[in-house]
Length: 151
Image (cartoon, rainbow, N blue to C red; front, top):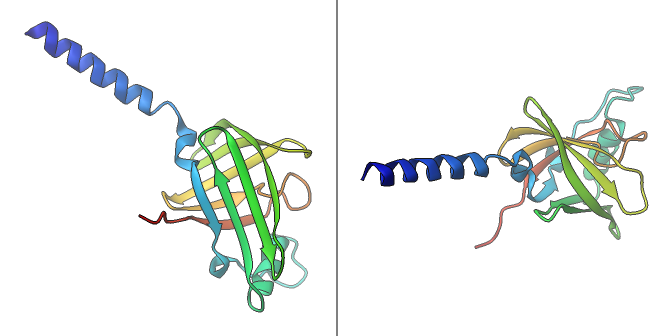
């Protein structure tokens, strides 16, 4: 009887340990841009300039961005403003965790590999930087919310 209890306890401990081995699992899902949380920047400021432009545009036209991070280590980003959408896709892998920020290394098809940082505000809200690469727009912060799945 004691052997059975010990076996059950060991199995429970192993299962709990293995289920927590993938910190990137919380990023898996569909995310959409929260246009109402985009911030307008002060005139002449470069900080979050792209987000500020999108914030201004969203006052007049529909601005969308949808990011899907899949468990099979692929991702797809679709974005657009008042017209046809553009898309990027590729692969990702977990790099590290910095406090509440999950860092993924993303490899877009035909683009340079770069870091995507997801700072978790809560389980359904993140601030994403590196969404558009490491270049000029790499440090722009975009608020994303998890898309609700229809049941």
